[in-house]
Image 1: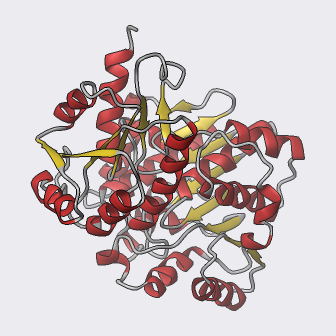
Image 2: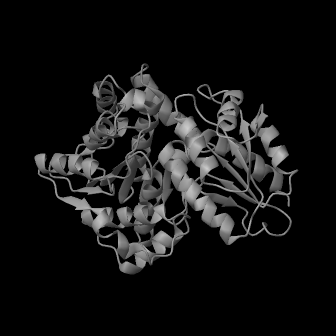
Length: 401
């Protein structure tokens, strides 16, 4: 997602395209976890306040057009044919560009055409060398939770990763941070001071947002809500309290503890939950949210489908999912992606944690098994790619019902 040879190629590509990003009034969001939710919440508040918003997020869940959207009451994705045309323009200028560089350049071209009032940009991974870090002066730099993920690219300690995330901080641009980790917070605070930036610590106002109604489930979403609202204020954008409340209540991001067809559950079908948790911190938050959800709905028989990439700390993730969740039957599934871990290997880890596990050769096989066990809840997690596959299968299966 980032070019670890530096940003020279990306900057040259944008220059060749006429620097479409030059006039953006942008909110730039980095972080290990929570940045997608924070981006959507930010866009939702701005939309409710009457602004048109360009939203760029990654990765996509089912189709690549999800990455580039205009929010003006319609939440419309870029048209695939137009996206292909813009990507081709970028590739023609720089044949060696990475996939994410091409996505980013195409998104910039699209937003330059559509001229939204504000653009909300989520980094891919990292920050310092991320393709979105070609913005010269965003309105605000936002950093959500920082954890150990993408360690091969970003470093194998929380401090190295935090320094990479801090790379989005620009001279004179306010910095909004939600991390509760004092050591990480000090890295951001010091970097902000070195760049003459105001530093806004969301943990100081977190409790003020506990009363807000959120459509996105999980106590961790309160932190993301507070971050989104504080980012807008730090950017100097005037929005009403009503816009904040309604925007947060309406904000929704597929694949983040998404309960599909929730109204149907309870009438003989299980709650079918999709969550793209793909690192230990996200798995820990998921376990907490899932436990609360199953307790609320009195679900004692649950089915968990897990698939993961080879480069993830799946051992720790499985430990959290087996140790912190009760009443679960587990299955591993092959993910249709090149970096996916063998489900047999994942099954061995479940066994080492003292849990039996059904090993499935495909997402489709796991889905069929989920329909046979009279479960109260079915949870799909471990990879956003697996989440997307199972989401498609479920919606296809239920579209005529």
